[in-house]
Length: 214
Image (cartoon, rainbow, N blue to C red; front, side, top):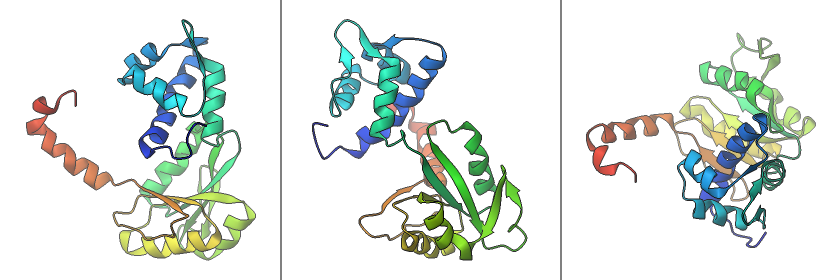
């Protein structure tokens, strides 16, 4: 790796590259150029080359990138060459949908535990995962070596859940609750705010043309 400080934007593009490369692999396409990647992903080929160059020299002039090799390298960069266990807290409709998505995850990241505070949900199953009481979160995270937590509880419960995940040793959190969470600096947190994204789309209904291509 050429730099210890890689921007968030670069890291967020790597899974996009990986997803398309996996599609090429399923179609048994052996090589791909940055131009082809750029065309399919609507990205500047120079940006793609620059992104990948942060981590090494993966391409060959006149040939492009070996698809299988680049998949392997990006998986390694993203730590997806190892099993990463995930815990989900909140077994409502969104929690059910995310847990069922397990069937489509192919990159060694799996939801292995689901927690909820409702007695009506505890003991039932989602995608063959038994919902556990929130009181078992700490022990389960440590026992199952869970490293990432997903929060899908109401906003007024989210900080308490985040505190429990952090106390159990979680290193990263994906938060779907519509609230800002406070965690220690060593814990990475990403917010998935459906409401903000949806509301911001309304702006482009009247202003989309002038922003086209931006």
